Length: 280
Ligand code: HEM
Ligand SMILES: N[C@@H](CC(=O)c1ccccc1NC=O)C(=O)O
Picture 1: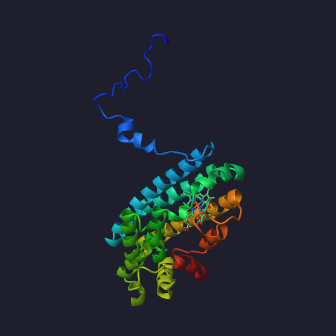
Picture 2: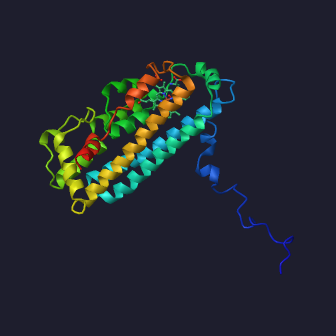
Picture 3: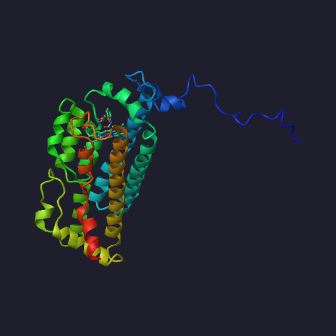
């Protein structure tokens, strides 16, 4: 039997010299990522605030990557690959929902010491968040103005504004499957937020009344409902977390704060997918 004191360490085959090979940090560009946390205040908790936002933006970057690919698959009529990516987007959203628990460990006196250093910056100016909203159909042309001084963000947002949303693409897929969608709905102005439409509700009802016949559209509908549910939960946790941290103060971005975020809870991305349930 081998003496345990002479045995080689568990890592003895690991590569240790990276002078001429790509390492973990090289591949992930960690020099860049880990040098981007630069607190402006002397407060200990600002590191949490920065990392919470930076990680959220990274997850949003992945959501956008998936949402763009979902749109391509929906337009080509390849629904199952879209489903897999839709599940991923919903799980990312769930992850962001749980992330509020970490931020909520920051108390009002802690945040009060950081807030004066934030100036008029606010999540309201997150171009990735706004693009996610646009891709899901919550369009608002007026909000492009915020990004006028950032040409790349402005360009991505402009195309998300003028192109059909993922929900418009889902409705187009129903029309292609022979379900009766009004021509006016199919030609709706893509720069306007999604408005409930009776022919769309009726088409979803046909799908939900005969899932076996319309299995892929039925699955598409449930994936959209999962996504919207996760998104609404995120909005709700944003509101409750900020009420806990700043109460009813106005926002640094210029809105009334909690009451603005409360109003955003009324946004329904895929209205007919919820209203149809009353008739089932
Ligand atoms: C202490 C923490 C936070 C506070 C006090 C806070 C507060 C606010 C307030 C008051 C607004 C309304 C806009 C304004 O006037 O500023 C807002 C918007 C927003 N915040 Fe936060 N927030 C916090 C953390 C976060 C985090 C971690 C994220 C994640 C990225 C985030 C993302 C957003 C987004 C995307 C909006 C725009 C929402 C919309 O227009 O529907 N916030 N926040
Ligand atoms: N709107 C926040 C400030 C804020 O939360 C914020 C500031 C800079 C970067 C990200 C932020 N997060 C979300 O709004 C406030 O009114 O305190």
